[in-house]
Image 1 (tube, rainbow, N blue to C red):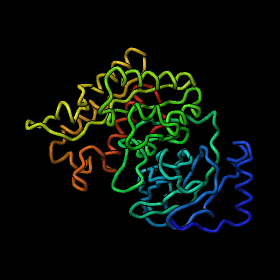
Image 2: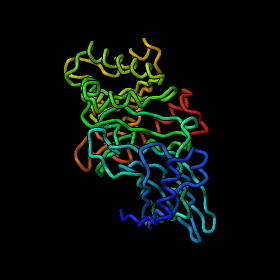
Image 3: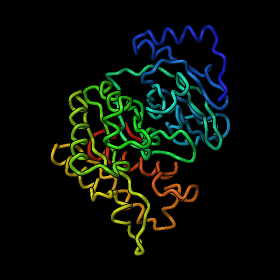
Image 4: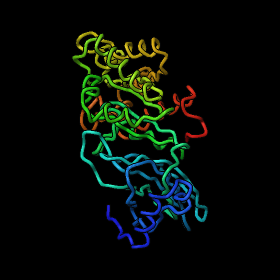
Length: 345
């Protein structure tokens, strides 16, 4: 994405906004002077930022916004001619900007203005007030993470589009991680835990790579993650893994491969449910919900959820599938009163 040259005035505005209190920064902010026709770049420090956009123009338009490592921040929004609309969302800016063990990415906040007929009339970026922002941390694997390359997408990468201003997603899911490696690697849980503040949600979905993890170890690792989150005043939420797209001849999903039972006979979803019940942890049974969706679509219809057509991949989701699964997560967050309904789209 081409970056526009920031004028001296804009640079001074950046420095002032970052040193100001949230209320002062909100009234000043950073605007459209930092944008080109296809995107915007804001020289801001790592942190959490509110973004307010006005979409539309003299003609009918349809605009969506993504940012950082291919996160969908605002779903494509149609506008009628002469009838602009205002939307707001909150975004997490960090380094590395995508997967924790991946490349650092570009400093600051990068937004891409997309859609079938994009029209950005105005934009304002301000530091979010920490006491007015809920953070949702994601601990997971490649089916959750901010995937760097098309056509891959994790459901955590699509979750932000369902959240309004006041809730941000800090996606610390990482490709290839198990409960064992997530706890052992200092770039992962040891990095996430100090960032957790009282009341923050931390969603945990780890199982796909625990192929050699025995049941006692898998259970203990989940319990360690739960305890570590609670030690910081956070609210752990256990999430059973999305299914793999492997069918039996009768049109149901395979009991082992598809439903995440490993070679040692460990039923990961069952253990996750058991830990949630034993420790009074909210549970999002994404295994059951994605199983129902995949089986309802059938062998052919479910291909579009995954990367079967592109990669013969029955584990990783397409942007379409990740979006559908993120919607399931959104619905559960609301149904279990983990996120107020007024803060979701």
